[in-house]
Every structure is written in C-alpha cells, then in structure tokens.
Length: 233
Image 1: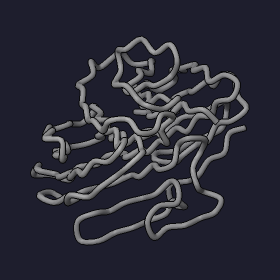
Image 2 (image 1 turned 180 degrees about the vertical axis):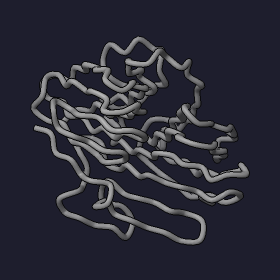
Image 3 (image 1 turned 45 degrees about the vertical axis):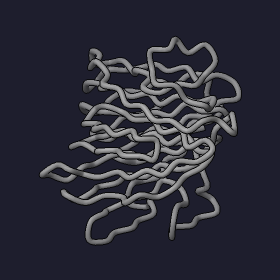
C-alpha cells in the first residue's frame, strides 16, 4: 500500500524567520491520523532565514537527523560539539539521556532542510552528535546516510534505532529498486523533482507512506533528489 500526503495538505507554521511544513503532528499542528509511521515520529520541512535559527533547547530519548537540502546549518550543543553541515550532507544527534543544542543559519541565503525524528530502540544511551560529508554517488542509487539496522556496514552515521535514512539522485526515466521486507515501512519525500512509486505518483515535497510492500520501484518522472526512511513498523 502506498499513501500520498500532498505538500499542500501538510501542517504549516510560519513566523519572521522560520517557514515550516510538518508531515506529521508537531507543535501546534495536530492530526490524529498523522502521528508518524512506525518509529518515524517527525518529518519537518524547514526554511530558515539567514542569520537566524533555533536557540538552545533540550531533547531526550530521540534520534534526530538533519538532512540539508540547500545552504548550511551550524550546530552547537551542551557536550561542546560544534560543526557546520552543508547541502547534501547529514547530521545525527542522539538525544539519549539529555542534550541541549542550537541550530543556526550562519549563511547569507536561506537554509532548507529536512528534520527527521525517529524513536530510539535503545534508551538511556549517552547523548552524542556527528556529521559527515558523503561522496556524491552516481545517479540512480540510494545511499544510506544514517543507519541503525542489523547488519549495517558502518559506512553511514550510526543510529540507536532500527531504521535508516537513505538519499540519492535519480535521473528522468531511471528506476531504483529498494527492498523493505516484512515488518518494515518506508516514508519517502522527493526534495526536488517527482517520481512514481510502484506506479503511484509522488510530487515535489509530497510524502509517501509505503507499507506491505517487499520491494518498491521508484521511477523518476523528472530529475529528482529523494530522501527515504526505512523503519521498523
């Protein structure tokens, strides 16, 4: 089963520095039918104005993944970590027993990113943070950027969750096949472009929930950049 949530039906929040869309219930947006998919709890599509950002605030017991689509984000936390993650790259924060962090756009242009929260499979872990620049793989493949699944080969940032965040570029007309397997669900969003997933159309920044499918065929209707979360149901 593939269910599409069109971009124009996502939850919305806007103030003087943040323009956000919420794929699932978050903050002031609540929809009892949109509480997450498996262990995936939050997928926010954020645009952050230059010279602004999220001031220090706390988190506990959550895996928080930030995929930067345009611009860059600068992270700082209570563990003393500080770093800049730019477009195409990813950062992972393990909130664990507790962490305070801030995320700022220090660039001259807006930063656009996906912020993804996944419920951890392990509790009481030490908090932590990491970022990684990934080689831009050839078009037509999905690369695991963060991975906590059994058997992960260690090339991605680790997660304390039975989940993976994958991304890639698919050229118009190309098809990528991705296995999910029993007991797993997927949630995918084209950050640019458009695709069909097992024949179902998914447009730019729409969200598609995939369940009960052992394998999906993702065909690009136009050149597309895609992010997919594979998570235990």
